[in-house]
Every structure is written in C-alpha cells, then in structure tokens.
Length: 42
Length: 331
Image 1 (tube, each protein chain N blue to C red):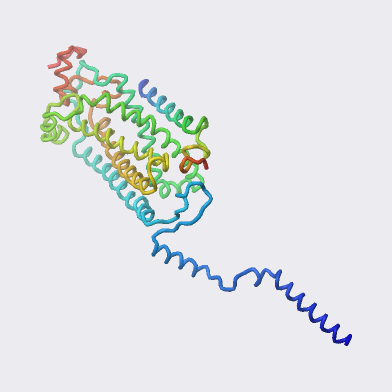
Image 2: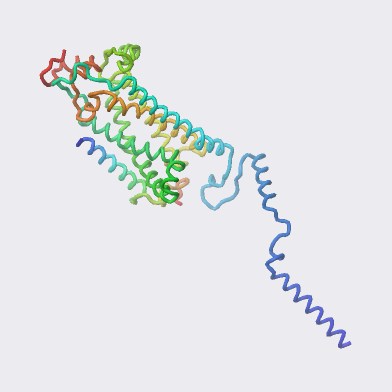
C-alpha cells in the first residue's frame, strides 16, 4: 500500500513538474510554448 | 427674369437636398442591390469541390493556419468522429463482455491445494513502484482519453455543456502532463523486465496448452509466462506508440505537419483504445480472475503453491537460491 501511494505521489509530482517546466514557470495557462503554433506564442 | 431665376435656384436646391438625403440613407445607398449570400456559399462549395481546399490570407505568423479546409481534414474528421468510436466501443465493450463470459464459465483460477505457509518475493519494492506509477498514470490517461472520444456525447447530457467544458479542460491537462510519469514508467518497465520477457521454447508449449487458463493443465513457465510476455510487449510497444504520437500532438508542428498530426492522432486513438481493452483483461486476471495474483504486485510476495502452479520453472530457480521462506517445501 505504501509503495502504491508513493507511486501515485511521484506520478502526480512528475506531472505537475512537467506542467511547470513546459509552461515556463506557470501551471497550465493559455500563454505557453505548449499552446502555440510554430513556436509563436498565442 | 427674377421669378424664373428663383425657381431654378429652388429646384436646384431641392435636387441637391434629395441627393444628399439619398447619400446618407442607410437603406439603399450602402447596400449592394444584388447580394445573394446563398449564391456566394454555393460558389465556395463549387470552389472547394474543384480545388479541394479553402485557404486565404491571415494575420497569424504561422502561414499553416490559413488553410481552412482540405480533403484530408474531412477524411480525418470522419475517422475520429465515427470510425474511432466504433473501434473503441467494440474493443472495450467486447472485452468487458468476454471477461464477464469467461468469469461465468471458468470462474476464478484457484490455488490448487490452497495457500501454504511458504512464500517468496516476486516483485521487489522498486518494481512495484514502477508498476503502480505507470498504472496510476495509465488509469487517468485512459479516463481522460476516453473523454476526448466519447465524453461529449456521454457526459454533456449529464453535466451540461459548461460542466463538460470545465471537466474536459482539466482532463486534458491531466492527460498531457501525466504522460510524463507514464512514459518514464514504460521506459523503466522495458529496461527492468526485458531479461525475462524474451521468447523461450517453453512459451510455445505454454500457448499450446492454453496457458492453464483455458483447460486444466498448468504448463511450466519461467518468471513470466507467454501471456505476461505478451502484456509486457504490448505495454512497451503500445505505450511507446501512444507516447510518441502523443508528444507529436502535444507539441504541434514541431516535428510534423497537419497530415502527420492527423496520422499521429489516428494511431494514438486506435492504439490507446485497444490498449485500454487489453489492460482490462490484465486487471481482471491480476485481481478477481486468479487467486493469489494480486499479492504479487500488492505486497510483493506470492505463495509457493501459486508459484508452482503458474511459474514452476521460476520457482525451481528461486528455491535453489534459497529464496523461499516458510514451512512448506518448494518441491
């Protein structure tokens, strides 16, 4: 059970970390490199 | 003649006044008299029919946004709105039906002779951690992915358009970002279990005897039997496919064009839905379908009788290494 909870926690942290990094320090919002076309922010 | 001159001035002023009135009238002066919007749309339809695409000028820096319609787009729309839903519904509902049928006919696979007091470690803490990290991510990815294909029709009547929009936005974020722990998990699964998942001669015997699931014989198997090896390769190859195609879609235009992204979405959708269907079978056999199976990934240890029944070759090696704990003998 502890291993399962730890795995869920790490998955959530990795997901949140990816969101933070890919959005240049912000959590998901519309102004990011992810939500862009051709690298130009929209 | 003064009277005549005054009359001419009056008429001229009247005409000028009328002209000015018509000039500012919003009725006829500003509207073309021959506008027919329907005729215009017919022209566009004919244009599209002949040219197969509608594109024009735009203000966004990316010129690719200026293509509004193209034949591939309509074929893709037909695929993801109709064909993909059929594939998903048949795969998932079909698998659920098979599982229920199988359970009714075969029932849960019991440990012959019942559980013993002897146990041995099947998965260490790191293996279980990787499995559950991947599994937890997969469940969220599956639910949020199914929402993309089926959510609009199934959930909107229940929670309304605003509720569906709010839920879908968060589901999309979860789908995007939990792809990272999932992908990491797939890579780790590939690396840590490859040594036990290469084909061996015993796999063919195992398949020939129905794996002990179909029928009553329990063919010998190593740490992983042929069925588990199939699951392993489905996870590695299927997981790899959804990861690659998913990142192509998450980062639009970085590595491919519209046609490439449409193909990526098609592969992502089909592999994802079949993946979900197969994982339902994996979850079934790992829980209610087989007595003693969940303990392997739950607490990490399995009963010796379970190991002898399902993984006799693996048990022999483990027993020789002295890794069986408890009262009952390994043989």
